[in-house]
Length: 66
Image (cartoon, rainbow, N blue to C red; front, side):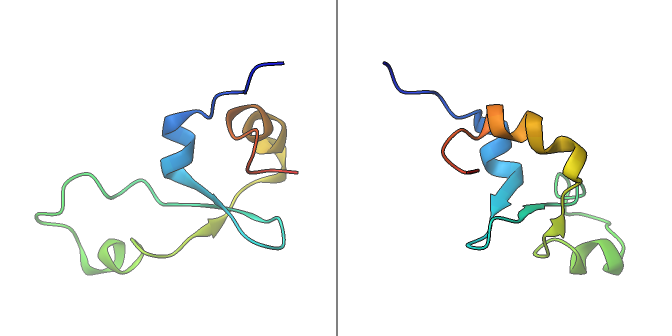
């Protein structure tokens, strides 16, 4: 059976922790000029993803979710 391909956009936006939680990034990273300080502070933080998205993420990240 061939290897499954990872969705490249999901690979950049989501991160799977060692315990299996899925973290997502806020979508404010595009233009770094004239951003409020609050959104700049949230760039490096991962927020927990909704459990409703788990089935979609399992398809997009076949080797990231167990």
